[in-house]
Length: 166
Image (cartoon, rainbow, N blue to C red; front, side):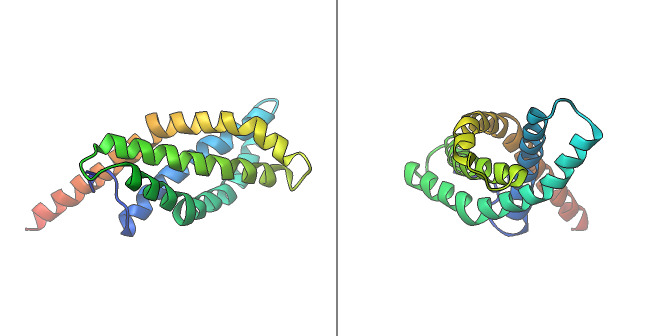
C-alpha cells in the first residue's frame, strides 16, 4: 500500500512532490544535454542552461501532471494489487512515467535547442535510449528517494508543530 507520507498524490503536497521531482530531473537533463553538445563549460553554456530550464520545467510539469503521471498511475493500478508492496508500485510508476516523459522531452528538448528541423526524428532515435537510461537511473536511485525524504521531513515538521500547539 502506498504511504501518504512518502508519496502524496493530491493537493499542495502532491504539487510540491511533483515539483521537486520535475525540478531535479529538468536540472539534471537540461544541464547534461547542453554540456554534452558544448565544447567545454563557459559562462555562455551556463546562461544557455538557465535560459532553457524554465521552458523545459513548464513543459515537464504540464506533461507529467496532465498526461504521463496519470497514465503511469493507471498502468500501475492495473498491474498491482492493493496488497502489492510500496516498492513495486513506486518502481512501476517510475518506469511508466520515465518512458513517457523521456519520449516527449527528448523531442521537446531538441526543438527548444534547435528549432523544428528535418533531423528531429533521427536525433530522437539517437538520443532517446541514452536519455531514458540516465533518467531511469537518476529517478530510481536519487531523485525519487530525495523527494520522498523531503516529504517525510515535511510531515515530521508539521507533526512536531501540531504537537507543540496542543
